[in-house]
Amino acid sequence: MSFYTSLNGMKNAQTSLGVIAHNIANSETYGFKRSRAEFSEIVAASRLTDPRLVQGIGSRVAAVNQNFALGPVEQTGSGLDLALTGDGFFTIRSPGDGATLYTRKGSFTLAGDGYIADSSGNRLQMFPTDANGTVTSNSLIDAVIPAINAAGAEFAGVIVANDGVVNVSFADGSVEPIGSVAVAGFFAPTGLKRVGSSNWESTGLSGVASYGSPGTGQYGSLLSGALERSNVDIAEELVGLITAQRNFQANAKALDTATQISQTVINLRS
Image (cartoon, rainbow, N blue to C red; front, side, top):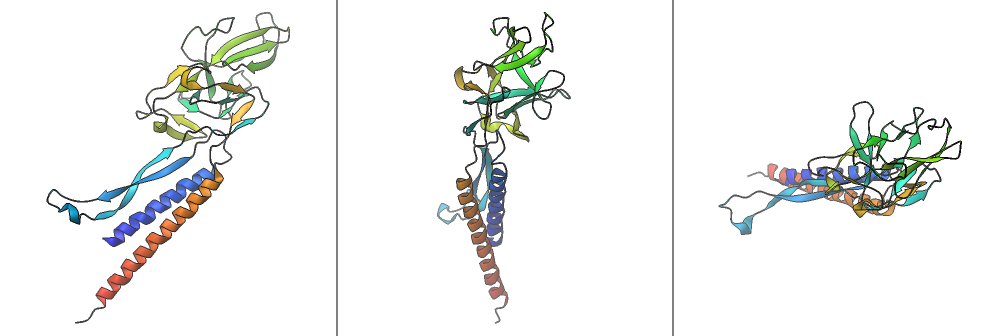
C-alpha cells in the first residue's frame, strides 16, 4: 500500500511542478492568470471499519484553480490597447466558426478590412450606439471602422473613451461613435475554460455571460492606451517550485524506504 501512496504523492508533486512551470513561462504574457494546484486526501473505509483504525491511502489532484486577481497595468500609448480594472472580460468572436471567446488581453489592432481584432483575427464585440454615443441595444456587433464617413471624408483616427464608446475621427474634422465596448461578467469566473492565447470559453461551471458597459457594476473601468500584464508573482512561484520539489523528493524517499523494507522481508530466512 505504501508504494502506491508514495507514487500518488510523486504524481501530485509533478502536477504541482507543471502548474508552477506554466505560470512562470507566462509571466510576461499579457492578460494571463496564474493557476494553483489543489489536492485532497484519499481515505478508504466501509461502514464496518473502526473509525479509530481508518488509514489514508494518499492524495489526489482536486482542482487546478485559476486566480483572476488584477495584474499590473502597463501604459503603452496605443489607442487600441485596452485594460479593465474590474472583473469583466472583453468579448471577441471568431470570424471563421463564430465561436465567442472572452479575454483580459486587450491588445487590439485595426485590420485591413476595418475590423478591430486581436492578433488571431478575433473581432472585438461592442454594443450599437446612436450619434450621441448612447447604447441603443444589448445585442453584440463586430467592431468595424468605416474607411470613409457619409460625407466622403477618410478615416483619420480612433479613440476609445473610458465609458467604452469607440469614437472615430475623419479627415474633415468630424468625430462619430461607432459603438461601445461590451464587457462580459460571470457569476463564477473560475469555471471558465482556458483555450490558450489568454482566452477563455464559458462553461456550465462559469454560467452564462452577463454584459454591461465599462464603469458599471462588476465590470470595472476601461483604460485606453494600457494593457494588463500577467498576475504571476515570480518570487511566490519560485518558493512554490522549491516546495513542490521537496515534496517530490520526500515521496521518492518514502518509496525507497518501502522498497528497502520489502526487500528485507523477502530476504528473511527461517
